[in-house]
Length: 310
Image 1 (cartoon, one colour):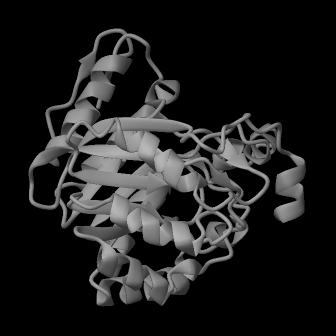
Image 2: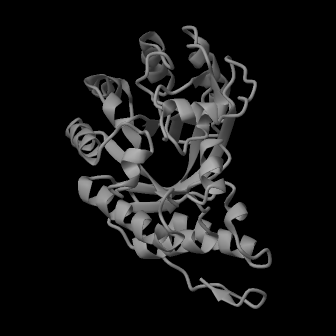
């Protein structure tokens, strides 16, 4: 049986982190809602562990066991802002939920709003069940627009309950409706590759999930290949219940999802691990990156080594 206890028992050790420093800071390009391509500062805050223990999650490896002290998140943000390089958009990802007071206390949340003056867009991640009116209050304190990224994961009726996410599609839709009513835009994280589902159906369910997110009101869908490596997913793989998705499947989802409405990004972090062919891997990943920025499909790449055209 897959439950919180069994997921945690399968884990390995966490990475040692400094509570006064973000564990990663990046500046990357992203296509905006207005159609321009602009730099986004992404801050991966070192935070306490998320209270939800999702089956597929590996973010817990970059979390602390205890809540942060007031002011520690602010110190992390100040460090990150030194790398902003003029970016006008910022993502604050904390391997959990922005509205979790164990991760970011109320006092720090108010301080964060002041630190972000001048950013046109502020993007945070949050569980649908934590989308309270306090998010609207935080949005009102910002000089720019707030966006909330939530894990939809999948609309597969049998798999979603098994992910231990403790959320239904109705929960997600209700949270989206509330956020949109507060003038807050919504992003959806969608999984490519599901446990207990044959790999032949990976593209189908990822595409259906993107379409459902759009119909619900999400202006961005981010498709993330599901990875083993967190313990629980490795156990499922060993027992024949999970197969890693492929780069070709990621390409297929992008092809099905474009053009919009809205934007659809495919996550390319560590995308090389999903490639079937080393000869065409880099060229194909570069093509996916260009399409992420343009939201316009390009001709397929043909590879003489693997005789594969995507």
